[in-house]
Structure formats: C-alpha cells, structure tokens
Figure 1 (cartoon, helix red, strand yellow):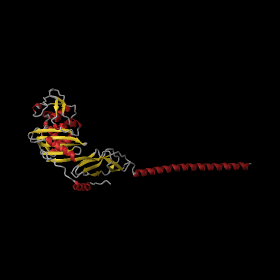
Figure 2 (cartoon, rainbow, N blue to C red):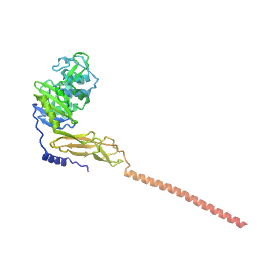
Figure 3 (spheres, rainbow, N blue to C red):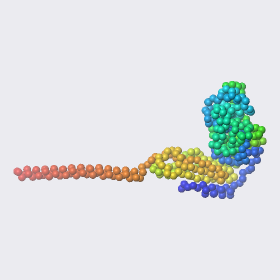
Figure 4 (cartoon, rainbow, N blue to C red):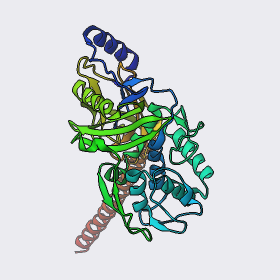
Length: 411
C-alpha cells in the first residue's frame, strides 16, 4: 500500500545509524572554509565553516563561463570592447575590436583565467559589466545560493564580491552538468585561434592538481592576496564524481588531495530508484485501466558513509483525481528520498506509459440497453414477418382445399 512513510522510516533509520555508526577519520585542512559534495545528488559529505562568505578570487569565472554557455552558441563571435586592454591581472592580452568565438573564449576564461576575457563576455551578453553582474546574482539565487554577492565577472578583489564555499559548490555542480564545460576544465593545455596577437595562442591550465591525481577532471584555481589560495576541484572514482571547495587556504593542493581521498575512501554509492522501473501506481478516473504505473525521470543514487551504511527513506505524494487520458511522462506526484544525514532529494513522479480514456459505467449501461433494444426490435420484426407469411400460406391452402371440394361436387 502506498502511504507517506517518511516519519516512520526516518525514525527507524536514525535509530539504526545511532546504534551502528562509527565516526570517519577527521579532516585537518589549512583552508578557513571548505566543503565536499557528491556531484549528482548534491549531498554534503563534509564541511568546515562552509556558509561564511569569503573572497572567491578567480573561481568566480566558473559562473561567468557557465552563463556564457547558457546564453551563447559555441560559434558566436565576441568582440572585445573599449577599455578591455586596461583590465588588470591574468589576461589574454585582448585589444579593443579583437574577435574571438565563444568556444575559444571559454578556453581563455578557464585555462588562462583571463580577466579581460570576462569583461568581454559580460559586455557581449548583457551590454555592460553591471548588467552582467545582476545576471550572475540572479542565476546564483536560482541555484539556491544564500551567501553570495557577485560584484564583478572575474574575481578581482572587491569588498562587495563574496561567496560561501557551499554556494560555490552549488555553482560548480551546475556548471559540470554541461559537457562543453567539463571538456575544458579537465584538460591541461590548448591552442586557440584568434584574430590578432597570434603569438599568444598557447594556453596552459593553472590547475596543477590535474597532473597530481589521475582521477581529477577539474575545475578552477583562484588567488589574490586578500582571498588566499582558492580552489574548486572535481574527481571521478568508483563511478561517481565528488566536488570540493577550499577558500583562504595556505596549501590548496594538499587540502584538496586529503579531501578527495577521504571522500572516496569513506563513502560509497547505491542505486535507490531507477528510471523506467515502476516505483508507484496512481489511480486514474475514467481510464481504460484503473491505475497507471509511475516512474522517476532520472536514476536516484544515495551516497552513504561506509562506517554507517544507512538505508534512505522514501515517501510519496500521489496526485488525487487524475483524469484520463494520461500521457507518457505526465507528472502524477512527487517522490522524496531522505537519509539520517539530512540529505533530501525530491523528484516528480511521471507516467511510465499512456492511459487512454475508457467507457464509463453509465455509458456502457446505456450502450447495453440500446444494443438490447436493437436486438429485440430486430427479433420482433422478423417474427412478425414470419407470422404474416404463415397466415398467408394457411389462408391460401384453405382456398385451394375449398376449390378442390367444389370441383369434386360438380362431377
């Protein structure tokens, strides 16, 4: 029976985990703020002061690059604006009027960490840097960031430009959904094509961790004097990805290495619900079938601490009064998966197959009556015709008998 079991299961899970939990070894990092999340679910595996806003330095460019992917095609051409050659720090050495495709500019942002490229991108998308900054902050809110205030597109130090480690992890997780983004942050060098400054085409990633860890596949370094060492990392092992953030560190490579090893050594992942499998059934009014099978739109995985392997709780909110016809993929409710660590994953329940309308009971009754009346009417008509023929034949026979009798009498 499908009922809301969240409270009961959560209570049981909490009891089980409390009874069998054994603490994972502690992490001691140099960063003032740090966080580890599993990329697909977004579950926090470990955190240190992860909600305090800090200077993000060039990790800011993760958001700038993601917005470039979301708003432009790879072959679109960006024209460097006036004043671009005055931007300080890491640079592509753009000159006003220089043209570069979106794809080549992405390499410039994410490998060279080009501050001037960020200004060119902001102007291309929004017309000005302030307008683009507003777009950055709006996108951050959409992703659930609560401790973020962007004030420029490149991360040059600014008292009003701060973000928490956890919010940066949310942004990095969203950016890593794009294959175009992943393909760039996971490489160490690239040669671009540009319209001028042809001698400055070879880009080498500032992410030195890529050469340390074979499982590393991103993402972005950052540094200013005020921000300290900043790093957003990604690595894939055992079939799943982990994202790390360290802010204001003194040894970011060591910090990140310890965090990655700790995450994969102490956690594992299991498939909880698979798309395409029936996970619930929902009642349908007026359908050819009384119920329709429901599934989830994507696989749901649960990442858990190996020292306390707790099963997640699953609860359903099924829509009532669903009317036929039901189309494949139509939302039929919500499914919520939770665990004792506070992780919550909520997805829509969707129809696994279509359910057409079916004849109603009243309609079927009327149809049966009309069919019965039709049969009875046809039968009566046929019987009447046969009776008439029988009477006619009987009358004709009488006449023939009478005529024969009269003939015999005359003889």
